[in-house]
Image (cartoon, rainbow, N blue to C red; front, side, top):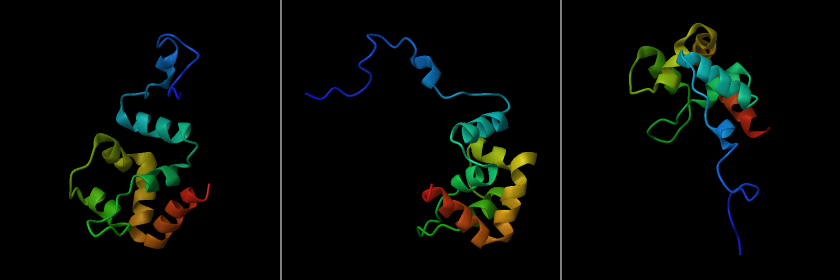
Length: 108
């Protein structure tokens, strides 16, 4: 018989450290999330990108984010803050840089 989940505890005591950490301002949560995942800032920013409606991954996500065209979460909007906007701007100008940064995440 298979029992999924923790088997070393009879209650949830100690599991609170597994909950997502939420900080104000949101940019602090985004930075913390990237650090916990062991990502460099450029990698963390690249990871937010979503494919276009035709399924192709490109820097269009960052173009739309910066232009405010579309619906974006608070975390995505935090990418427009000082420490991440540099990478957003670089990805807007250089699609190949974005794609290569994104692809390096799959090779880890």
